[in-house]
Length: 191
Image (cartoon, rainbow, N blue to C red):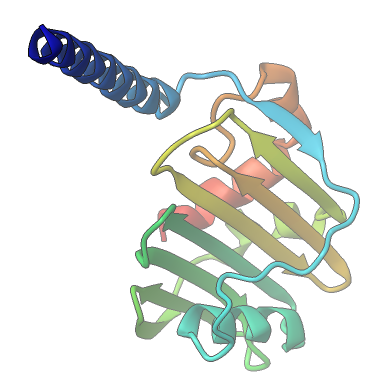
């Protein structure tokens, strides 16, 4: 009789475990849907970001260059997967020789190239940059990609952090408010 009770208890515990496992799995998939609505929160602190605890990691070295260099324009796209060492960084900046440089770092490998494009296509948007910071909150998410988008133009500085694709899941009114930054994002993201 004791053996039958233990078998029943173990079977129920196993069933509960399976229900829990599948509900977490479906919650994970549900939270990774791009069309989910997100909350856009103004970040007035504009505190300096960090990509890693390791100051000598390439992503942090590039980030320090972003903050410390006197480039006219400087842009960073950074994303990483939660709980892993995988990351991707793209940086675009205009150096003292008026050349646009692109730096790509993927999981510790750095590539630098000179870009050739017509600056007139984007210069108005870059010159309209105002100091702003935003945090896009899209709910609790497991194994998500997190995104940081930074722009520096002379004394103006823009910061955008998101737990979903940048600028996705926000309202149309918020997209209109951020249209200048979205324009810069779209222009450089494809370069």
